[in-house]
Amino acid sequence: MTTTPSRRTQAERREGTITALLDATVRCLAERGYAATSTAAVCAEAGVSQGALFRHFPTRQALLVATAKHVATRNVAQFRATVAQGVDTVEDVAVVLTHLRGVVLSPANQTWRELLVAARADADLRAALHPARESLQSQMLVAAADLWADRLPADDLAAVLSIVVNMLDGLAFSALDPDPAAPPGRTVERALRLLAEMIVSHYPQEQP
Image (cartoon, rainbow, N blue to C red; front, side, top):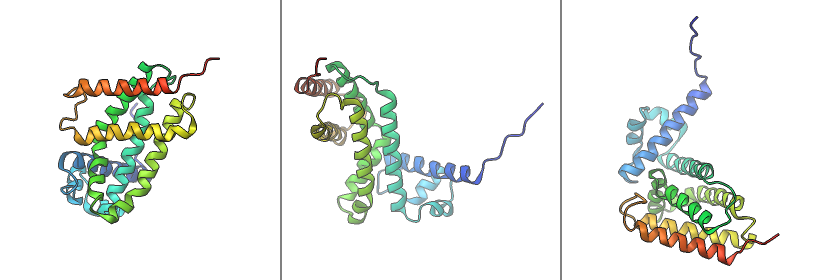
């Protein structure tokens, strides 16, 4: 007995088109950079017409901002999925920082670097990205609280997260090779471990 595949609903087709456009924008930004990521390039990459693109995203800027939000949500979810709970030892924290580094150096996260650099000279883009940046910071704070709330005082959590993120972002901006194993990989690994040691030693776990 054979079954006929069910047809996708209009909502499912719409969602599929949007996802294809967002993923294509991620690839274009990572491979071509901000200036060359035109709506035509994205449509060619996604196999979608420009008419379909503009039905969902009225401007190129709207598409880029939506892509930044898409990457942020996916990266936080990926980080949560790969990091176990119970971050107590230096080794535990070093593993968390290594996972974070992998997320920051990922091709998808190149989206944020391209857009942040472009926003420095584009006030409209900078303003449009502001809510997305706040949303990303909020999601990261929630994830950090889930991992470190028992160790770090609430007043220090955002500050420690800022140190970690700024360090990793700085490494990403300065890295010519996005491979975490590439030089100066061993130096970076040592830096991450030193940071883990400082976090654990400065905020010792209370004994029951």
